[in-house]
Image 1 (cartoon, rainbow, N blue to C red):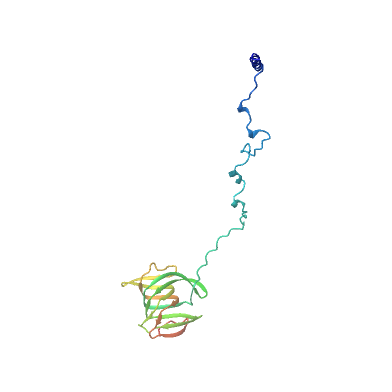
Image 2: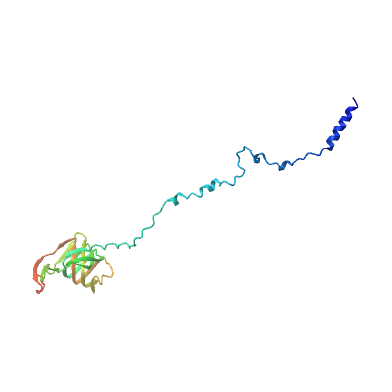
Length: 238
C-alpha cells in the first residue's frame, strides 16, 4: 500500500497535463458593471444628450421683447404755431401835436419802436421815457371831431412842466433842432428814422412833436387857455 500512493499521484499529474489550458479574457475587455444589461443603476451613460442649464433659458425672450409696442401714429406732422404777437399799446385814440420854442427832456431814454392803436388802426411809434419835461411856449392841439380842434396854450414866454414820476411819451414824429452845446442840428425822428442813440438828456428848439399818448407825471401849464377852433382857423396862443 505504501507503493500505491506514488503511482496514484503520478497518474493524477499525467491526466492534468494532458487537458488543454482554460481560456481567460483580459480584464480590460469586460464591460463595466454599469453597462451590463439588467443593471439597476440610475446613472445616465451620457450627459451630452440633455441641454445645459445655461442654454435652457435662451429660448425664452427677455421680458422687454414680450411687450407689444403699438405702431406709431401716422397723423400728418404740423409745425408748432408761432407765438402770438404782443398786443399793441392802447394810445389816446387820437393824434395830438405839441409845439414849443424849447423842449428839455431829463432822465431821457429811447425805449424803441412799439405798436399803438390810433383811430382804430395799429401804427408804429417811438417810445420815450423821461423823469421830467420842460416846455417853453407850450401849445397843444388835438382834433375832437372832424373839422374841430381843441387848443391848449400856455402863457407866452412861460415854461410848462411835467414831473413827479416816470413819464412815457409815444411819438409819431419829433421834428426840430437838437441843441448840442449851442450847435443846432436839424432832426426828424419817426419809426422809419429812429434816434441813432440814447442820451440821458436832450434839448430841442423850434420843436414839433406829434404824439399819441403822454402817461405819467403831473402837467403844469402856467396861464393855460383852452379854446375850440375850426380846422380852417389858424392856431394862436390866447
